Image (cartoon, rainbow, N blue to C red):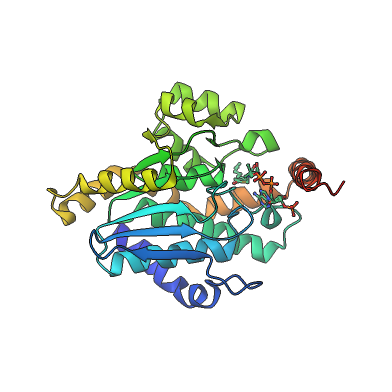
Amino acid sequence: MLRSKILNRIRLLKPVIDRRCMSSASKTPLTLLEVDDKSGIATLSLNRPPVNSLNIDLMNSIIESITEIEGNKSRGLILTSANDRVFCAGLDLNELHKPNQERLKEFWAVFQDVWLALHLCSVPTAAAINGHAPAGGCLLATACEYRVMLPQMTIGLNETQFGYMAPKWVMLSYLSVLPRRLAERALTQGKLFTTAEALDVGLVDEIAASKEEALAKCSTFIDSFSKANPLARSLTKKQIREPDVQKLIADRAGDLKECLEYINSPLLQDGLGAYFEALKQKSRSKAGKS
Ligand SMILES: CCCCCCCC/C=C\C=C\CC(=O)SCCNC(=O)CCNC(=O)[C@H](O)C(C)(C)COP(=O)(O)OP(=O)(O)OC[C@H]1O[C@@H](n2cnc3c(N)ncnc32)[C@H](O)[C@@H]1OP(=O)(O)O
């Protein structure tokens, strides 16, 4: 019932997805999907330069790919990045700062959808985190069942650092991998964990020296289900995740309303504006433009 609801929602999105899976600027696909003939494992690479920030088009492309993977009988899904430095920089701040209200509503609904699609994906899911994964990037990774990360990267829900409170359902992802006390402290601090710290607290499961090794470790995780009946496995996963998923599904409209009010508040817009400007300034200095 729950699953058919979300799949119906995803199906309703399909016409939008089909029009939007390419980057409008370069006409390159925003996600790259490869299915290994031998293993049957699908690798989904985020491909939106410079930092895979999540705008409506990228999130729709992820949802479309998950639907395709579920339809083509892949044995598992590995989520990774086509960028060697950044797994995903989280939500596209351009969508949150001084937003067009109609677009913001669509953006938030698609953000909810991508979390649901990844959370309820019927096949085993693993993230090969081959770059930084702040905020929404961490959320994508924690929605997967297993995480392998490269050294010297950072991961975490750092929303409080730029003046936002993570929505309740985003916090649930953290609580599914971290003990409550640690999750509370990390969320309130807006802590970004280094790879070593993330392994230490259990936010990631393994460290790999290279992207290839990370993909291999994710494949080994997916292979660990070879003796489980796929339907029984997916129903079990759904059953365990249902309480978290229900908390969002039961009040999507309420979540949207709360978030819009929160995002639009002048104090938060000012904080976000300053944070985004500092980010751009850092990028300009790096490029020697200032
Ligand atoms: C009562 C109910 C309450 C509920 C309310 C809920 C409200 C919740 C609201 C928000 C939730 C937000 C979740 C998010 O995901 S927000 C996004 C947070 N992301 C970050 O903080 C990451 C910021 N980026 C970085 O730290 C770095 O860019 C990094 C990813 C580490 C990569 O570093 P580096 O390789 O050095 O690249 P640059 O920093 O030079 O960046 C290159 C260009 O990319 C632009 N950029 C970076 N991140 C973003 C982004 N998230 N969105 C848009 N653009 C981004 C950056 O400005 C550079 O561009 P340019 O050269 O043009 O300036």
